[in-house]
Length: 321
Image 1 (cartoon, helix red, strand yellow):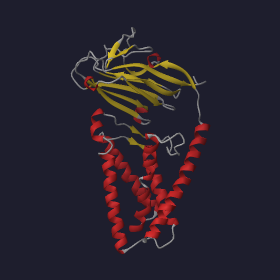
Image 2: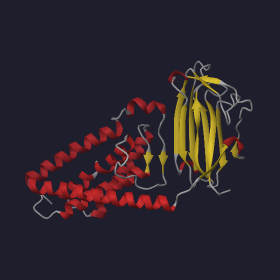
Image 3: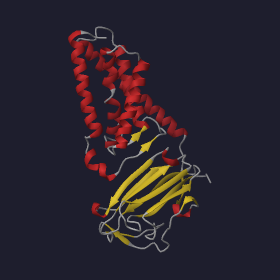
Image 4: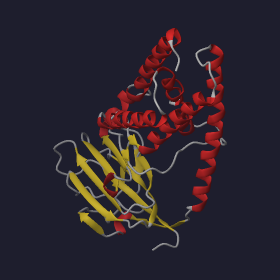
């Protein structure tokens, strides 16, 4: 631990840093402006830690994942210097705190609850803690703090290299090939009911002419529908399009796509005629999912649906029936 003025300054910097972090968690990156779109969801089963070097160039996805790791390094680096705390206690308190913050993000529609994010954050805290433990005393001098940053950078390179290697090995060991594609309308319904338009009628969304090729959610469906299909782990992706037709003058609907009751992931979106723009495309990784539930809910009093879904396609895992 450090003491005196250095301890006070470190605590003030940590508090200020936390305030900035909370701003970005709840208000930054346009979260307020997009919260009304209902783009929140949750993911409870981890896919792994999404860390790697930007071999194909810096993308927004890479930067987001790296920031989820690097932004939490300072907590592991400096909290043990101002508060006497062992690693397991620090990690446990951090996991509880970040989980609460993620739940609040989801509940306020300012973000999603993602277990992969929590694991990446926790890895950042862990590497930061190991970095400050690696550096010998004194640690309350500019030279000592500089050594902690250098140690954190070196350990981060080693950690990212290791995670990238493990991810590559796992991907190679679990790699599956894509098989045939099937329309979701060809699957038997496990629960609920839904109507598909056999005529594949042509319509417009945002001034774009849409000609469905595989299936089309019927306009005769009521304003609120929920249907569940059995997947039995046979499929690798689920994709399709959604939008509000131009001839719906007013109307807003929420579309919720959940895997295994939400345990493996949820995609939620709210669409209205006022949004305009092109038809919305989505694609979900559904490997291992046993069931898929589509819920459509009108947010107004229209008796029939406001939103249309079309070309809803499942890609099978090759050689699995």
